Every structure is written in C-alpha cells, then in structure tokens.
Amino acid sequence: MRKGKKTPTVFFNASVIIAGFISPDGGSAKLLRYVKENKIKGIISEIIYDEVMRKTAKIGLFTDEVKRKLYLIFGGIIKAPDEKLVKKFNSIVIDLGDSHVLASSIEAKANFLVTLDKKHLLILAGKIKGLKIVSPKQLIERF
Image (cartoon, rainbow, N blue to C red):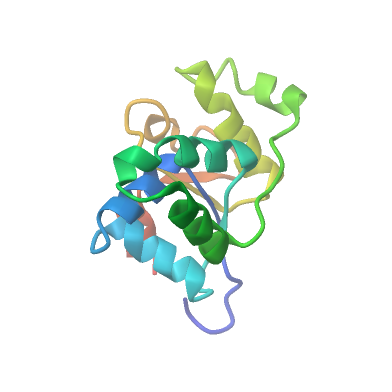
C-alpha cells in the first residue's frame, strides 16, 4: 500500500480463508498475512466464521487452532447481515446462499470482496455498485 492511501477494507469469503490455511504459500495465505500486517483491513462475518469452523476437517487443523487463527488474523467478527439487505441480493445471486456474503460486504463498507468462488461470486464482478469483487490474485496485483 502506498503512503497517503487509506487502508482498503476487504471482506473475506470463506473459500479464501480455507485456501489460505491449507496452502500457506499461496495467494490466499498472502492476503491473510496482509491483514495481520495491517496492509489491508480484513473483515469476516459470523456466518463466514461458522462456515470456516464447519470445514476444520478439510483444513486439517483442530477446531481450537482454527478459532485461534481466525481471531488472531481478523480480531473482531461482524454480526450476520440484516435480513432485508440479504433479501435485496437474492435476485442478483445465482446461489441464494451467497446473498449474505454480498450483504455483509456492503454492511461492512468493504472496498473489496475477495473470493475464490468463480461460479457464483466472481461472475458478479462489476454488478454491485461500490464493491469490487476480486480473486486473491487480482487483489494482490493491486498492491
């Protein structure tokens, strides 16, 4: 991040967190390090937290370890988004289960939503006013 620039706020989809924990040398892990180093402000919601916690077996870490890492990286976790806002995105998303991700990103006033979900979220890039939906690689290239 260049001097004089505001630290960007990035909402993390669960896919990026899981990939970052599984592959410590990949782009997702690099973004998690950026959050720890305060290069970006990383945000997750209670729903994203719960999704990552449900996938601890896939990550190959113990539940307590994943919980510790999440709090170490992200600090606070925002509440689940307002249901009215979630419903607003139901007509935009392909998978209704992704409406909360967009709603949380907007409620958090995130500049970016970072995701690995090509099929459901990355294809919405440019369709949500005020929110840039990007892959980890695209976000890293911006810095």
